[in-house]
Length: 253
Image 1 (cartoon, rainbow, N blue to C red):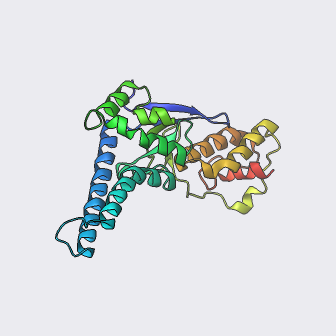
Image 2: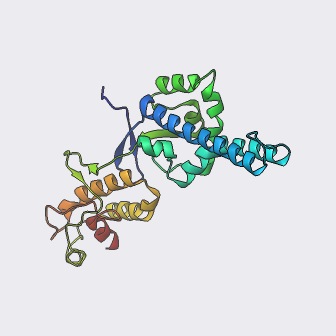
Image 3: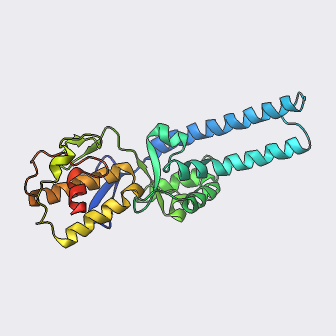
């Protein structure tokens, strides 16, 4: 058994990618940091409302008190939803812990899925300190708490410092090894129509794929199609935005 829990995803392009699942340690760290941020915001809001109301109490009465409790509700329930929807599945705590929420197929998490997983967080918290959630993470084969099971999401580790090829060599998506003008002389006539559709499908949806899987897909496509391209150097670097020089050249053909 591998030290890291992994999940293999088959993409529409017919390529399999591995995602490393986040464990209890990194998820606990993310939850702890997010909770501290939420508590800090609540305390700051209480102080501000107390100062504005000219009261020694933390919360002023009347409208101020109503606004305070409404703000707590929005902060507790909306905090994760806003960040996961607008920041590619990463709250500040998850970003610090190097993890993110994605759909089961590897796609970015949307508003509805995030809303479901975070509403069910109430059940995960039972009976105390995420007891149900911890049991679910340990018991499920994809490290999912109850909210993840309900929303069809998983929590995965970020890939940092580049993406590793099957041979173990890391590459970075910003590395350019071939002038773009030289690509025009490559002969891609050996590429089949099915392969061309796969490349074009990838290029069309690349912006909806998280950067890690996107870079891996670019490498896979480039490495599989490279031997069929006449004129391409053997050491060409596939990891060039938006998915590889070779991939881009093939898609334009």
